[in-house]
Amino acid sequence: KNPGRFRAISVLLVALFFGGLLVMTLARTARRALSRIQGGLDISPDAPEIVNARILGLKNFAAADAGKKWERPQLLPNGMEMERTYRMRPTRMANQSIARLIDQVIPGKSKILGTTEELDAARKIARGLKIWVSPIDRYAVNCLTVGKQCDKNLGCWDKRLSLFMREVFSEVHPMEADFIFIPYFQYCYFYSSGCYAEIGSRGTDTMEVLSMLFNQTMNILDRHAPGRNWTGRFVVPFSHDFGGCVRFAMEENLKEQLIVGQPPVLKHSVVLSAFGDWDDSDCVDLKKDIVMPAYIDYESLEFQNGVVPKSSKRKHLIYFSGTLDFDMRKPGIRRTLIDKKNYKHPEKHILDHLESRMEYNYILHQTIFCIGPPGVVGWTGRVWEALYAGCIPVFLSEKTKHPWEEFVDYRKFSIILDFSYADKLEGFLEAMDMKEIEKLQEEGQKYREMFIYRAPYNQENGPFAFMFKSLLERKEVLDGRLDVRDLPRSVSRDQGWTEEEQGGRDPDGR
Image (cartoon, rainbow, N blue to C red; front, side, top):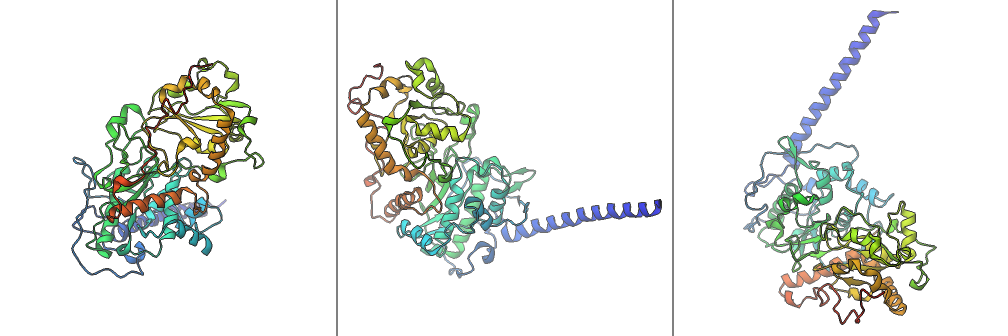
């Protein structure tokens, strides 16, 4: 009824819209400028960034006296140069914080270790080690809270470990540290490429983020612990399948192109990863690296009324129903396992895909043997779920180190065979005596906690406890109190059962 008023309101709304865009643009520009001053990382070792103690979490520690800087390791492989002109990503979500990350890990909690008793238990399993944890900056927090792929996979343990370490060693100064821990979220930086920073018009990749984090950490060490030699004392988690091969590809035709082995900066660092294949890859060095279990969340395990049925009471002999596409370690072996032509009594086994988690857990509790073939790496993390349910793991693996082999003999609770047994499993397993089988199952229940991540992660028999035990051995080597040749690296065997250990069984026997 009043065209003039309508036009005035329309003009006002348009002005408010474009005014809002202008304010948002100015705010974004200001954040970027501020990030370059306070949080930006200069890749050049000759011009370390201005350390803002409040942002970097060192407000309680005075800077050490100026001294001779230690010789920094080479960051990137030869021939790979990183542009120095880059910008940090602006914050894209409100209310981001470490507390929010912890709430994602343990709903309703703002700390991993919420009580004095939990913190004391965590420091007890640390075995007196002093580890300085490099800050988890706001750009990493941004990646972890925005990235949709960062918490829905077997790589979740890196986030939990980093938050755990941050609380356990909150009072450690760099000058007194035995190790320097660098929080690195490999899975997130790969699948949410560019969430951390930008170089020109593209986002940073996994190798570039790693070099930036190392540079940031070394700049802090130069300021607060100058002169110390940190060779061999960096500890970095790599949760993706390829571990220390920071650049990688899941496609077979790109594998050789992108897997370049560990970059120079990791050659003298402790790499924590699930990758343990030592025959044809430079992704792991068992003289220094630690093989971790893939992430299995205790909360995801379901129990059949809290009872683990004995092997003699179970319905099925063999279970395997894994993904067929990820068999890069031994192409075709998974299809061999599900081919029912390789079984005389296929009705005894579960070789078909299961539709639900409930059905999966039920089958684990009703099957005697669960097969763990190689995938991208030499073993699959699902075997730990099977072990917890009382299903005896059968590893088909060659020249692969499994988690915590240096502390426990896998032959006490599992069966380890080479690849050639993929089409002979039924005859081999049927020939086993039930008393022998139930002994394996009984032993497996003693060791199952070693492979399961249970909040708040401070159990004396949990994965982090064994990680600290491994780190203590490496500290003794670095301090000259232990010869690396004396370490119990693994059980003395070639990842397979010898003919004598197989007891003369005929794998083709029916």
